[in-house]
Length: 119
Image (cartoon, rainbow, N blue to C red):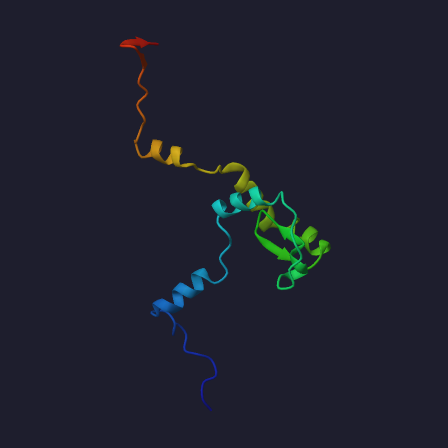
């Protein structure tokens, strides 16, 4: 009889296979979650395509749940606690911070009024 399982390491050198494995179940990035936190203040409409109609959403992890019990169980998990800690420690970067880190400083010149320099 033939082999039922693929040969061990058969996907080792296929770039397409590796790429899909890395991004298949990727969690939302921290920047995306900061954007979600700003939008979370608004009420959520019912959506048939989402689990639980989109009513039970965890903002910190970006996941939808079927009911309130599932959401509460999720908030007790290690994954949720790590994400909350990560969000608390890391802050959202702005364009001004990025320019400062790159060494692009803005020069502050004294105000000039009628030919006189005011400080």
